[in-house]
Length: 141
Image 1 (tube, rainbow, N blue to C red):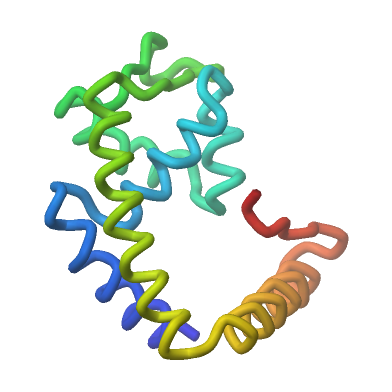
Image 2 (tube, rainbow, N blue to C red; image 1 turned 135 degrees about the horizontal axis):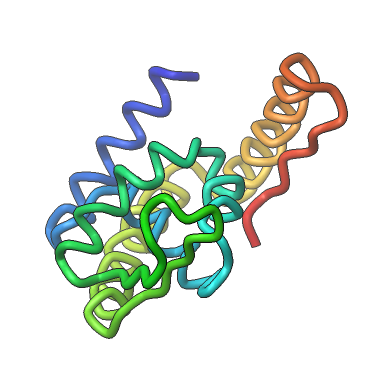
């Protein structure tokens, strides 16, 4: 699973890097876009990241003006929102991501992809039960 994750990550990273970000940053920007104004702890939970990793990922995006975070770094309820520049880079990266996604599902087959994705979420639920029983990992909406 880890090897597959690295291989797929490299493919997506290569495509979205042309707009100046990596696939992790894209996931963070997407989540902030969906959950603007919510505490970053919720963003971290949705992304299955610890807060420290999320803050490390956010630092260059705040510096580059893609994300605004009006609360103090140590604030328990720190929030973030996309700036206009962040929205532009997200739109560009989403197009690059869609190109890769279309190519992969085209070669793999949509039905096979959907089946694999369902099985991966089932596997994630099993892993969550091993780690902490009764935690349900929800597919992104």
